[in-house]
Image 1 (tube, rainbow, N blue to C red):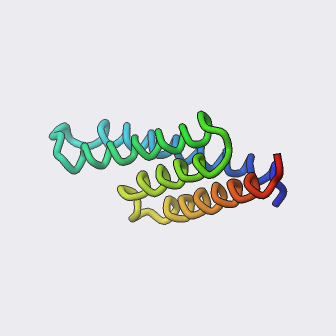
Image 2: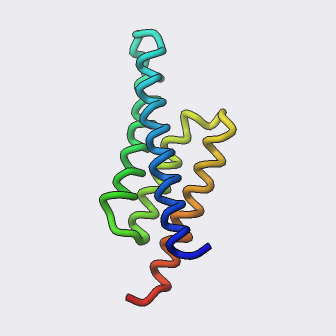
Image 3: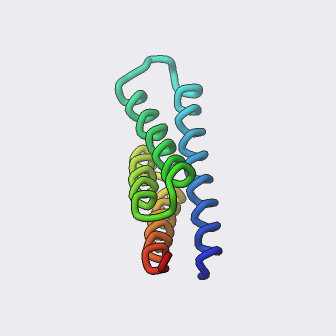
Length: 111
């Protein structure tokens, strides 16, 4: 895959997964009963924190290793509450692999 195709695919995957995490956090508070148990708060905090790390890693930082680390940490953090689904672990693996491959391509390309 070319560098531009990899960058656009990674951007799409990261933004889609971070939106999914944010929606799941909002839905968790909206659809669950209003007993703010420690598990519910932790669940929403992991999803929100994962979405925020991925968004910051993709949008606010330049492409490189720091961006790849933020995106990978955010993807893994947000996947913890949703590990039981089938699509989220596959999407997380794709996001981590694409962000690392993109960072490697950026490091190999001379400035």
